[in-house]
Image 1 (cartoon, rainbow, N blue to C red):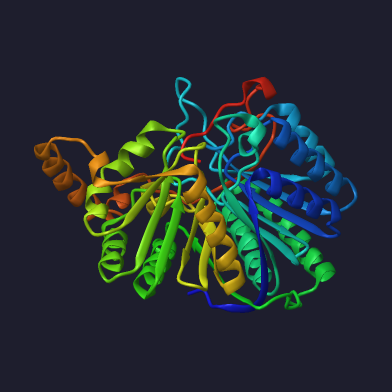
Image 2: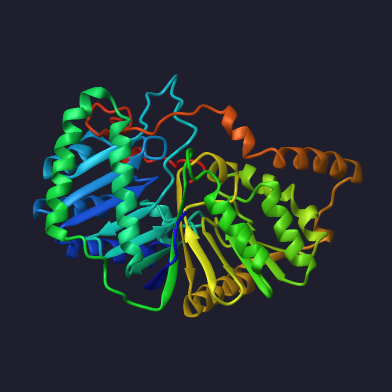
Length: 425
């Protein structure tokens, strides 16, 4: 189980305008190491800026490991990858797979984390991918999203996790990579000798947990921490989440909190990037509203955030949605923060969304026949009461990390003009 680590500082980074400059500046200042994981990397202006930053760091001797998901980043060109690897960047593809009649086959159990660790001293955790649709100038489909910049002892915990993930993924890869793995482990030993094993010095007052979800030992950790926070709430709970269709136990905690007088607010997508997202959430509205939960739909642009606050200290920011993919299948990472100042800041930003960019949903907005409501409620109850157990029926595998080359399944002969959206980002 993760343990609370004290002495940290957190800076909320809202949208790409705040996030990308801080990440790129940190990579530019790196002296020893950059480890970066992302679900989506596109060959647009943001992806090309990241590409330039990583190449520059590698050329000046920084050890750079970049992990992308084989499903989320399927169309990177051979030139894009080769320029990285020729500079010395080690590019890893999480479970790449060839397409079948044009369809991606690696659908289940994706690497959905978004993490950066620089020199074991600074980290970034959140929901923002490396694509131009996280910038406002992308237009009406630009995403609303969040990440945090982290300093302090919790960074050492995140650093250890990303290296363990690299080693585990490589062990599960093809046997012909055994020699390459030994070489990379030797490189890591050399790197640790450079960086040293001393934990980052305290930089603030915040306590933190780094919580992950996988398909082995930590299958429900993120959901469990949400439920603990909701159960402990005495005054308020605010959840802003892009893809909302949680399990029965989390829904029950939300209803119980509202019924005991806690102000429970959900900020969900009103202008979804996928129509099924809103349809799924709508199926829960009557059930939640009847218990006193307040529902707000963010209508300015697609909501992509995965953040929450509870009472005056507890907050979380990360990659995990509250839907079957994130809670039962994907590899996810959230940071949980106990700090009044951060809680107040995130709360103020969420309240700004509610006041200026959301419409509140009431029972009168839900116009549908009573018979359909009964049928739908029966279906939803039995579906939610049985997941994440049903996730075990879906294809399982040991995550593999394969080095990206021009011939990798995740690399297509596609340039920047063939950038496509990956669903459920």
